[in-house]
Image (tube, rainbow, N blue to C red):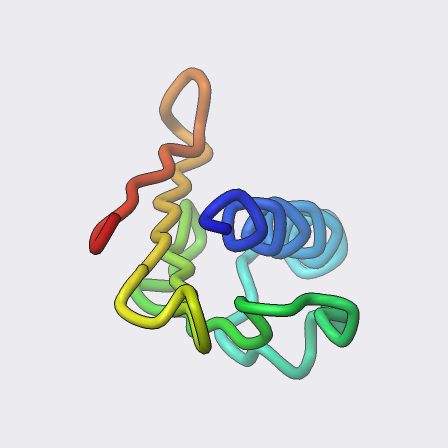
Length: 90
């Protein structure tokens, strides 16, 4: 179940990189990224925080059987490897 949340945040990362290529900063408005999670069963929304010209944090919380699980991705374009994903509530 948590892998669905990680996949969603992977889509967020891809969309953020496209946004960054155009605007030289990351986006702080989820709707602007046009990430489509309508096919997801447990993780259908995400939030963004700590958005800056060098990175952001994205988080998603599960619903239904995944209730209580949160997946968080921190991305920093100044760090090799860039993104780290963590899980809570497993």
